[in-house]
Length: 73
Image: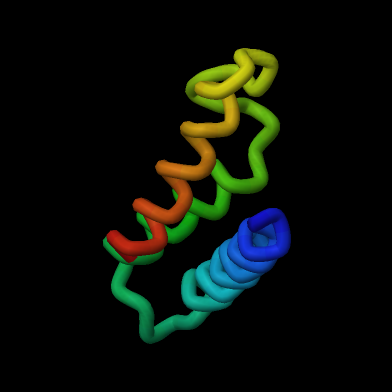
């Protein structure tokens, strides 16, 4: 189970980096660029909607919002 979650987290990290490169591509529409930069900024930002020191909810927002942003992109 832990290995599966670790693999999923690595894939998610890779997708966020790919999203950054899609943002840099000039063929990407500006609306998609705005969404891409918001997702990348939230993924790498130390500021969260729910602070990480709250036991379950702190990490749950990252687990839900980043994949949701990737799906919207």
